[in-house]
Image (cartoon, rainbow, N blue to C red; front, side, top):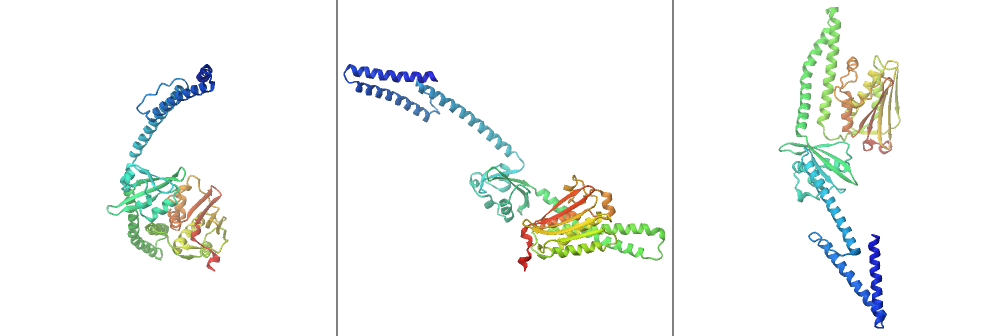
Length: 433
């Protein structure tokens, strides 16, 4: 590289020397110098023109041979061009493979920009949402999927949970839509056809509801006859204990059927309840009295009402959820134990917690506690008369009210179940006044 620049400098010096020598020979040295430099500049401009012409048509022209510094510049440009073409080919290959792989996916994928406009989608997304390539690129996805629930999900999509909605009635089609943020304000919309799963879930719910209704009548008859037999003075003493066990199991079955019917009603309601103001503090006070009125109850049941704020919701549903939490605490807390009930509010909303000093729950079992019929210890749950549906009811009630259930527990020390309600559900005491 240095040698080339030394040679170029030598040519320039030689040009100046020749021009001065020729000018001195005719008695006008400055004229000779100007003519020599002009010829040198014209020669350089010619090379620059040939370089520019090649750069503009390098797709089908060979690099020019320019000698000296210009030849080195051409070499460097050609090397950069080859490297750029190689990277472009690799990028095109990667993009082609990515497009082929996403088209092979069983789920739809739509890439959205920061404004919610479609930047790209795969073949399955086009099939599920009836998208067309050039027509729908750049269109806001909310203009193509016109459902308020989807617009709310898209606006607040943080990747936490998918949204299932019906996009077509004839034929019935249900899609699961999951918005995942990535990059700077961009989002991926994952689409899955869950029509079959939704139909199966609907069939399951209908079966449970119908079976519960059908079982209720014969169980009522059985319970009536068992009660009549239990009060019969001529009953043989040897039959008293089996009859009492039969009555206990019938009552337990009636409780299970009742909880199943409650769950079925909750699942059948899609919209969140508007409801009326509910005095949660007064409701918790009544639940505390119910616990203390039991023949067997924990030695200490405390209630801390730290706010006079109320909740906007369905009173029967909220009472069912809180009663399940208090009832569970009373069942699993020993006679010398303690139950603490607390109601408070802050900037994040309103909260109700039920703390007990029972046996506690293993950390591995906590994620499954709200599943239907799930029991940490099946034998212990049956001994206390639990149906295994209480926490499932709590979960559904909180979801319908925009809330969530938080569970904290330590084995051997007890558990705390906390219901969190969003600020929009809270009716502040000063506002009511």
